[in-house]
Image (cartoon, rainbow, N blue to C red; front, side):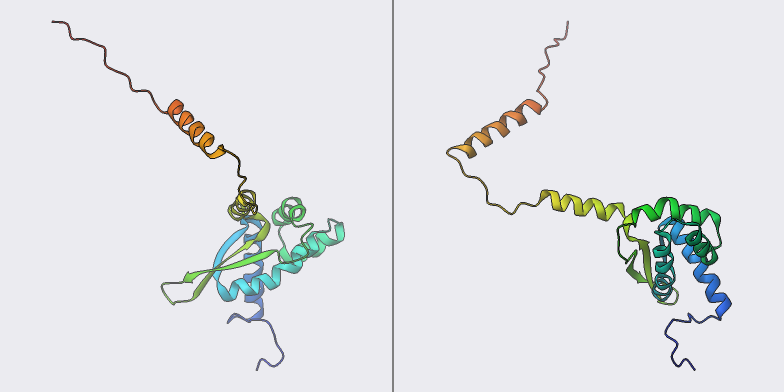
Length: 172
């Protein structure tokens, strides 16, 4: 029975589940984004977020504690050198889970789990949306619209390719 056990067992015994979470967390840290089932992504988030919190403090003790969980020097170096400086000011919530659909074979729900600070596409969209938004009204001036239209027409005419007439005559 599972009385009082709050984590997802993922249909595996303890050794297999620990190995699965270890390998998935190493892959997530190295590649910043992985695709897996929704249940595994939720279990991975619970496993990896305390590790990321511990990695924000770059001391020998925290490196040894994280190494006990991840067991890979390459992953530790990536975590402390690349990821930790980016998440240093974030109070939590380092991972994002996005549902991507259903697997064809068994209709398992598939999700993408990624590190929040490493999604460059989403950062670019929010930066453009913030920069291009105006809340004020348009300034009105006497004849400013007519001048703007004339200036626009002049720039279009200047940048448009000129029509070149064929001056070559055939010699007979």
